[in-house]
Length: 160
Image 1 (cartoon, rainbow, N blue to C red):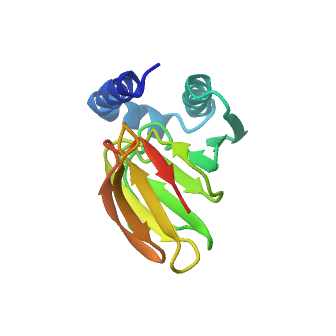
Image 2 (cartoon, rainbow, N blue to C red; image 1 turned 45 degrees about the horizontal axis):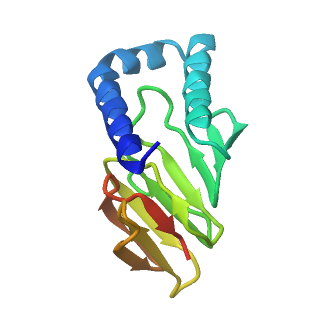
């Protein structure tokens, strides 16, 4: 699947989730038991199926190339006030509430969408780079730093 098709599908899926968020939020709040667990597991299964080379490592956490992504619980897409990030890591929370935690250097495909935050908590002076769909550099950030960004146009990340 092309990166453009992937981005369009992700955007459409997010729009559907946002449109249904009042329903999902009520369901997630009311169904924190087995139904909520099943809904979260469906979300994790869908992510793993759509992203070859990934695997589930906890209830809502998936190992991805370069690190991990913690999927937001259904109906919980709000960004946290301060994005916690371990020392030596680059952490990103996208507009859906998913949190990406990169701790290996490399060049990785990125699926985050919407507006969110980042915490570049790598070794001081380490530069994280963010790339467009064609692989050209979009912007960069030097550790240690935090901020906000629009993740939809970012297709690739090089944490260090």
